[in-house]
Image (cartoon, rainbow, N blue to C red; front, side, top):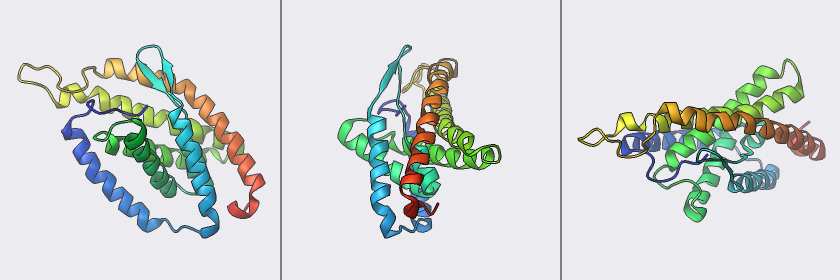
Length: 214
C-alpha cells in the first residue's frame, strides 16, 4: 500500500510535505512519553515495521500488507501512533525501498495520520456496542480509509500533471482503475487486520496491566 517514487507529482507531494511537517510538530507538542512505556512503544512499533514489510501481491498489480497502526493508536493515543508510524515509514523508505522518498510525505499522511485517527475514532464510535467489535472495526478502518485515500490520490494524478499533449506525466491510471484495484483487496485485508488488532490489544492489555492502567 506504500506509494513508490515516480507516482506522484510535485503538486501533490510538496504540499503534503508542508502539512506533514506541521502535523509532526503538533504531535511532538502533544505527546508526553512516560519512561515505563517507552520499551512497549518501541516493541509495538517494531511489530508494525515487520508487518508492513511482509507484502502480499494481489492480482491486478497491487500489493497488500498488515500495518499494526491500530495497535499503537488504541494502546496509547493517535498522536503517538502517528509519530511512531511516520518514523517506521521513513526507515522503510530509506533502508528497504518500502515506498518512495518523494512520496514519503503522502504515505505519512495517509497511512500514519489517517490510519491512526481512523482507528481511534472508529473505536470510540463502536465501543458502545462491544469492546471486541470496537477493536475489530478500529483495525478494519485503519486499513480501509488509508487505502481509499491512496486510491483517490493516485487516481487524480492524471488530472493534476499532464504534458503538452495531454498525456499523464506521473501515475497514468484514473479513479476507475485505482478505486477497485486498491480498495477492494483492502476491504478483505481489513478483516485480518481487525482480527489481529482484537487479539493483540486484548492480550497486551491483560499481560501488561500496569503499563496500560487497565
